[in-house]
Length: 402
Ligand SMILES: NC(=O)c1ccc[n+]([C@@H]2O[C@H](COP(=O)([O-])OP(=O)(O)OC[C@H]3O[C@@H](n4cnc5c(N)ncnc54)[C@H](O)[C@@H]3O)[C@@H](O)[C@H]2O)c1
Image 1 (cartoon, rainbow, N blue to C red):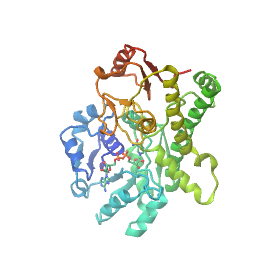
Image 2: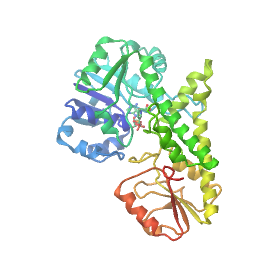
Image 3: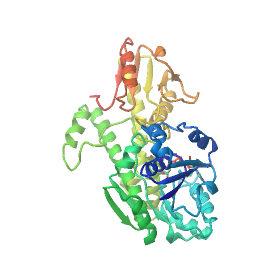
Image 4: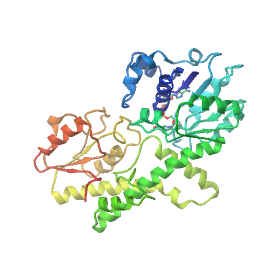
């Protein structure tokens, strides 16, 4: 099939590479010229495991093209256009900012008499798309939705091995076309209406965030009570109805999706219905990060140390994405109260507003080192070896701390 992808971010680029590997002709459009230039020069705009190898693989390279204008990417032979632009929370209203999506739909609406199917991969309440369509006179019923569930850090694996594929809409031809594209995937394919398809995405993320917050609240309660949180969580997870997967305590959760998606679900619910559980998930996470910062300060005092060094700047392992990273949020909480707080990450470049440890030679003694997320890479193992050589220093990681 001939596919056009709008937006070369985490979702658009991975989707494009995945479909190209499956033998489709893919052209990706992004209005960010620098990003397109990088891709055309075989440089990766962000770190994602295996991405570079895939893009350089001749089977992919001969099928994928990058443009910064729509006209070069879309023509009469285009079968499907996947919309993968960002849907951030609008700072003022606290609701989803649909400006990026609207700009794309306006552009696509200019391609008169073209037969392509518009498929929205971005996470968005489909009712907002219906409103945009009305406003710009675009046929909403022809649009379908194919929400994305990939995880940054294992995005290509997830593309090829999804737990399920969800496609929502009412236009049979468009749904069939999308199903055909996923023909070789063996997982369950769930065909549903537009609203349900996006609610599945939103509530999956909401459940995952709630689960992480449950684990974190448990960790906090148990450690203050004097019990062994990891042993307790492990024993709880042994119940098959609960499971140990995705049940690891952390300093907090972040990333570009969970915070905004949970916020948006709270927005749907706030209007008419009470939902005390869902509406407190964000607050639970913020309180947990407050508690964690205090917990570090207490540990520092108990052990009579002079510095705190947070290891790992992104929001989790195997990515360089720092959007809503707990490390940065906890740094801000600590730096207000304790000057000798640093971030150590030898892989990513951080803004100069943070106090940084940028090389192994600059490691400090008398320090509380905090692993913010697990990382089994050789670089991390080498780093920890050096950290252990520092006099009167301790490494704290929540998933093993008792
Ligand atoms: N990142 C994830 O892990 C993930 C996972 C599942 C779903 N999602 C959802 O997918 C969507 C995209 O997320 P992302 O992380 O890939 O975003 P991103 O910010 O990494 O990428 C979006 C890209 O779209 C481009 N863009 C913006 N407006 C454009 C326009 N009018 N025309 C062409 N390009 C335009 C931007 O320049 C940017 O490169 C969001 O709705 C997100 O919630 C993200």
